[in-house]
Amino acid sequence: MDRLLYTAMTGASGTMSRQASIAHNLANVSTPGYRAEEHRLRAVQVQSPTALPTRAFTVDASTHTDYSTGTMMLTGRPLDVAVQGKGWIAVTMPDGTEAYTRMGELQVDVNGVLQTRSGLTVAGDGGSISVPPDQQLSVGRDGTVSVIPTTGLRTTSPVGRIKMVNPDESTLVRGADGLFRLNTGQPAPQDENVRLSTGFVEGSNVNAAEQMVSMISLARQFEMQVKLMTSAETNDRAAAQILTVS
Image 1 (tube, helix red, strand yellow):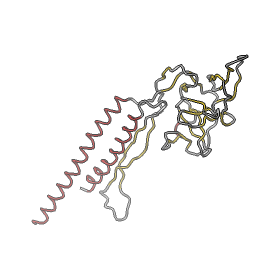
Image 2 (image 1 turned 90 degrees about the vertical axis):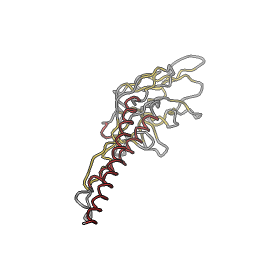
Image 3 (image 1 turned 180 degrees about the vertical axis):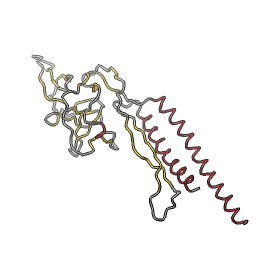
């Protein structure tokens, strides 16, 4: 009885967490560079001197991230870049730490600093990348940012290089802001093999149809777990009534 009730109760709670994760994925189906996430559950016995050995909880064992590549979307915009294959674009957070993203919609702020669309500073090989005013920008496959004067002699001059990394995916953790960081808290080294495609943006890797099917399946699973809790309560009442009559 205890095992049924506790497993069903905590399983229903875990199912709600998985539904929230899928809802978050669906909300980001159009977010460039987004990586789908999934909550995985497992049952564990309650470890307590006062707990009965029949009591078990269903716990959120891990949060799995799907690192597969999203669809490349052609934009033709010079500051739109997409990482080819595995790899990440490094950004500098307001507190000075480093994080990683696949969102390659870049822009230049009023101070001439290269940033992401969300306003985070793109990390360069020597710090932030500053762009002179009234210049055309181009980004090379290796991340080199160059400027071309709009007037006069149109010579290409590099002003910096975007830092791109490719750490082991098992060492990455997703933050509440959707960005990834190393689990050690240290910056990852630059990887010379990572390449960019200019004029493209990588779309989200969320499969909307698959996520909707999972949402329906979880809704049915939640309903079943609630029924199990109701059955456990009914059985408990019946047993109590038999003991009272006896």
